[in-house]
Amino acid sequence: MAADPHTSQPTAPVNGAELASKASIMVASKIAGAFSKIVAIVILVRLLDKEDFGLLSFALVTYLTVTKLSELGLSDSIFYFFGKYSNARRGYALKVARTLFLLAIAGGGLLLFIGAVTGANGYSTLDLFVPLTILALIELPTLPIQNALIAIDRTKHAALANILFSLVFLLVVTTPAFAGQSIQLITYCLIGYGVFRLVVSAVLFQRHFAPDSGELPPRLMREVLAYSVPLSIASIMWKLNEFVDKYVVMFFLPVAVFAEYTVGSWEIPMVPTIAFTVASVMMPQLVSLHMQRETESLLALWNESIKKVSLIVLPLMVLLVTIAQDLIVVLFSADYVNAAWVFMVYTLVLFHRVGAYAAVLKAVNQTGVVTRWSIYTVLLNLCLSVPLVLWLGMIGAAVATLVAVGVTWVYVLRRIGDVLEVPLQRVFPFAYYTRVLVVAFAAAVPVVGLAMYLESSHGFGLLWKTVVYLASFSGLCAVTGIVQRADVLFVAGLFGLRPRQAEAAVTVGNAPMRR
Image (cartoon, rainbow, N blue to C red):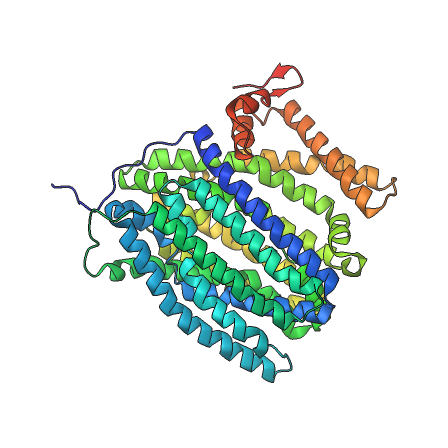
């Protein structure tokens, strides 16, 4: 049978060190981007009163929800269709950008409607949503650029773009606040951020995408939408799941309480970024392995990535719970100390952030499973949030999110097993995961014990608790032997160490770690 001229050739295998090296670039950029957003929140919290901060947060949360709704999963389709139609990537990217602009028009109308409706219910938000509508028209067509660059192995350029966008966003959001201007002016300044993003995206596209040697097949969008719409519904649901608890708090509790909940209800962005970034780098190879029907290799690559990411995510999760109160007070002031309890519960959601489960399902073209998973999570979260908020106050919303994520995590693991036709224990490395989790919690015991007898300021407490925890975890890893040479090389590479530097990190004391 003749080969499909549109279909790409198999992707060359990527070993652990190469995967870590590629992922480290995006991890660094995502950390920089996450850091800039945290800095923006810290500055706005300290410069705005709780009511203004709450209203601005509501407007931005709504904007992110609507743009995710309007995106229709088209950005996520880049990886799959760049792999399938490798000789028509420029044309496909342009088609996606044009479609996103048309969708942005509908999204802008929805933003204006929401602004009018919320204004009628006592919130003066329409003047915030007008500039955000303009921003949507500019920003939405640029959303696929980073995925497109990663897909053609231009990871460094994708990382640089992410850093530039994040820094400009930080500058645009905080400068008016420093000048004592209104939150309305902040949203208007975001239009400038959108223009900058559009110009940079256009330059990168022109530089890295030469004219195509092939043509896209007719009726392509029917195939694209069949793939991307389920992903779109899933993305919308995930965004709703991210914000549904906030909407419930906003509806039932005062704006000032919503401001406190906003400060507490966030995951340290670096942590989930690790799994998603590793999955993005692996995605072309996962697609290739599936197309070659190499299920065993696909599972091996997937499980190995989970094991290595667990060594970063799980101890960070426990550490963040341990230092929650000190961290919140240092970042946001003692006025927001009540948010620490919400932050603790929200941080526990990181327990499942050791893998980007949707990546496997996308790679095997089972996007419908991703959609159902997201819908179940949102519905369960919503059903739990309302009664728990009425019963426990704002912390009830965080508890609802944690429970919903835990229940549906089991569901998606079972569905991955069904799709790949393997038992559940082969989908996820439960034994290794449990060992790392136990060691991570055990490492917190000395910290909790010392905190009972040692009084310190929040700033100093943040410092000594972090140092003691990391030392305790490292010691327990050496004693239990859960960390091996390849794991350290991967983690070191993930954080940007060169091969020789990574090799130097493979020793604990003077004793080399096991291979």
